[in-house]
Image (tube, rainbow, N blue to C red; front, side, top):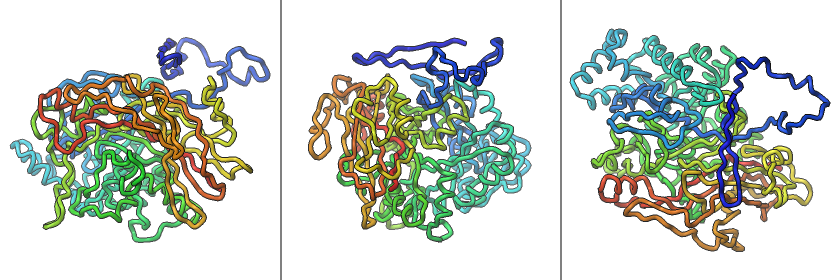
Length: 639
């Protein structure tokens, strides 16, 4: 078995990055039993390390031509192309532009919409079973006549009223599903690349987004025993959870679901009532966190960490803000916002935990793309857009294509959001023991994951009571962190007398990206009166900037971006940032959570790269620069 080590020099710091360990013992006999060496002093100190050693990068939200809203609008790339691209191969996009990642991903989930799964490829192949149906013949004839818009609109009519135009033809869905699971088996290579089986359940009550991606821990042999549940079956998440429970009971397998785009739910994602109108209960809270341990908080359709109206003292809150409406005609109103964004939901979860004895919003955080091009691209200079009609091109549609707001209330406000406001986001960073489906799924389930807006910042945080400033510099930082504290996604309980929570944090810039501006701790808490609060603390500032008495960097990091040429330099910021932070305002009687946000220095937006490459004007109203960021899953404190 080959082993390779790459040394990355960051000033005086040497970071050794090793690839995932592959348990390939072919020709080498059996792996020795640990039991045979009990009580012996052995030379290698790492024989019994059982904690995650590496962060793996992936995308849990990739759509291919098998999603009808991708395949019917020009995407001709299927799951095989999606896997090949994610593994680092050159792939030709549907518009003919060649595409390749700078560095491969470690895993992806092809999460095609379950509603009429595989419709577009079956039209293209003139599938005989499809053409036996009235709807199949009707929509196929429109496509063959070149009336693609009419064909898509015909399909959309059924989605709008939740009437399946292919009801009773489960064989078609099963054919498409088994093709997808077969592709996942083909490209899954334990220790090298994980092709995790999944699909998207596209719940859209009233045109509002309650979508979930469902991920299997299992392989094809179990996943093929079901047909994915769809929006035609139900829009109620509780029905989805029951379907998941039935799958686990029937097969012995394991599932979890990842909600996304709370910012497009019009107040439904973190509502105070269930979809059936009942108030939240302890049973509901427990089931929600059993099945939905993590939340996708950043992606192409905006960022969902927080909103400037909810966090007015947070100068970085207005990032990727989509707050006009959703896919239906209903406009956004201010009272919806607290029930849409992650930070506010995490705060409200503290109230529910005290009231119910369980927290329905105790989720970890990750990012993914929601690409409908089959191409998981998150770098600003390599962004292939939301869908095929907006793949790289100098034509105005690249900026002006409508993403949400097709439906408008007569006389109401304009709720249109165009592709120019899309983010080249996001990615999931997963701390796992090895690059396998099972290990990555397990990390998601225990919330040892974090979100980035597309960059690959390495972030690790541990929370505890007895860490010292010297612990941040320890060579065995992770081992000490697990032994004496908890990682992201963990819980601290019942503070020892006179102690307050301490976070020890390490952040390393994307090796092919920008330096770091600052490391922040976001705290949310509930006081003795039941009122909710939040505060942003700067735990470390680059370039030797001082942290003020208010807990913030004394000044902004600066900006090196040359907008006209879409370039920047790493002459500001730091490559590696370490932080020791102790809560200065801790009350052991108050419930709280803490998560880390890491900001890069300013870099060009994808629209700025496009303007420079294609020689077009910068779009109006879009900042030419941005600060990419990472959000870790929280660490919770319970009295």
